[in-house]
Image 1 (cartoon, rainbow, N blue to C red):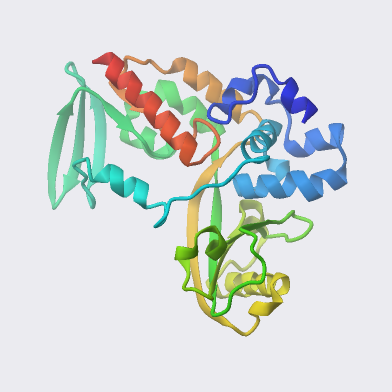
Image 2: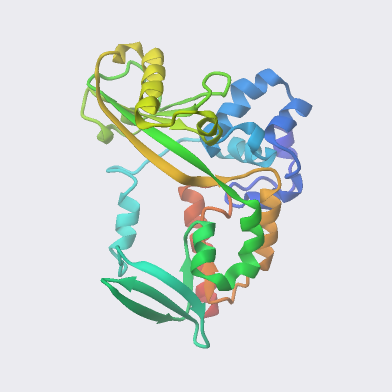
Length: 316
């Protein structure tokens, strides 16, 4: 906490790269130098596994400071009826196309041309500007004209993959916790468990439990068998060890897989993000908004989307 408060500028979780000067070592290297192995195992590693879907050895110490600033002492809030309420409310005010494939986004003398395929035909939209709100690899593929701005960051940035095992039980957990954070020393593959029925009672019928186990990137890479049956067996064994009242009551097992879940903030990535931000032209008709600007989350998505929108409005 002393080192966190000593940061200049102060840590801003909506713009972590403002602290890029501190992006010099991994969270594990920082703990080895500044703290100790026990603190790393019981505090730093589990928090970062939950925050980034990877281990502290693979994460910049800057992200550890971000996690402290973002999560310590905070109150969690959620949307009644589920998080889908927000995108649905936004979509209701827009002309949304689903099942369409964007082919390319090009600058023109008037602004930008977006070519897309839908229903077996190609279409083109002429617009003053376009916000590309995708992951970084897709942004570069769709808009090759942004390469000078974003390609150097893409060369430094990788994405963590993840597998989520959702387990339902016909009885409720005795625990009212909303989550369990696990260090690598406690479990080699699973870094986070959400008790969804405690987070949002609407996710499971009354008297039932719904839990989600997050298999993190390095843990998955070390596994020889990542088939559905094996992941479900590993997750079930952990859940029923931590919550023995659930044994023999499982009535749901589903898996979600993310090949590219969230960006991995390895050492040096925030330096590369800061450098990319200096190359962004606010007057460019192609503006970027994506999960690579800072720590991934709903708040940061809204913040950087608004930044892109403000650039578009200023340009007009």
